[in-house]
Image (tube, rainbow, N blue to C red):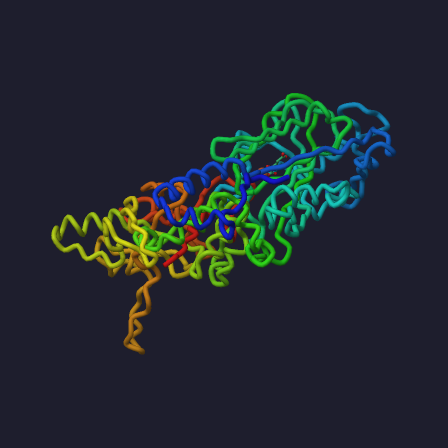
Length: 511
Ligand SMILES: O=C(O)CCC(=O)C(=O)O
Ligand SMILES: [Fe+2]
């Protein structure tokens, strides 16, 4: 199930010479931007399926026995009770067993920042923690996890091979009529290796309760009511995507939720397996052509792509610098393409210095000493003698050398009212009598997908010190005049403890 359009690669083909003789770097850059924007809308971000419990086992591989579910019952959990899904004995909406199960559940909470909240206006559901139940259902049966991996964890777009995922059972939830629902949220990452969530709806008759997953103006809706008596139905999605459960209007919607983790490491480490086949993607082929226009590329500065997905990120992940191993979907492909064509690629945080620069210009009108803005050659020639127009205007950004903890207000207490982002991280060591290196340095960056917008909530990758409330950072950076370091603060399905979602910038230097 390829998700991305492919064309024959021009590199290494007899046609490649003709193209190089007549390069149109502006055109190439424009189509790479178009394709990346277009491709991003084609990439799958969720997948679903169903398993029929009533069909003849000889005619389908999907058949399985009813699901057996046992849980700790009573005030001290001293009794074990059991229920089957579907409840074959009665086939009625509310069996005695289901009523008992509901009684032993707790109201489902969710997270607002670091707070655990029960707010029935936002989420109305009953829940059991994993410690209190067991079930013979496995998502490795009926090839469910295979399908999830094929759709969401591809590692090679050409031969359709996929990376390993592990599903870890997390909770059992019941959304009951007339008002069971869960409004828009993202699933709080349980660790920085989490990449997605899997929801399995056990066969119990209900109506309503559609699961809607949204991404950049598109949405996938999973409506499990119509087959709820006869099928196990499931959906998996990148857990940083916003999703919600609509109101259950009849019956009970019983789900098992799983966290999905990369097995050992993510697809970004699979460079050698992706290999040459990456060139089958049309934008990669064009990027390859563009890298031959050396003068033009030099004027573009760094090429940047700011990630479509958000990634669970923590201070410890920052210390290990392993964000690359988490990349998903198109983000992973862009990283691989950059890596293939450039020796210098990093996934990092970027701070927009526009307002700071503007203020400096205002103060000292004629001191324009941008350190890395490239030369503005209108009609220069590159090493192969091709002429090159000046590239489109690009901005100056402060590109992180690596991942770091965020800044807190008191760290900037000694600074001017408007500190330069290029000073961040600089500290004087009184013993050594030296200044440490700044964390960010000013670079010219041309963005291949969306231009960062000042004040955007989805721009840079920031690290966060465990225990610091994200709102504090948001308050600081959001109101700051010079930066857009952003922590993605959203309603989660759990109170945030250690990991936060954030976008990142993939930055490559080509010359
Ligand atoms: O039951 C569902 O479809 C999804 C539930 C959910 O989003 C959650 O538990 O975080
Ligand atoms: Fe969720």
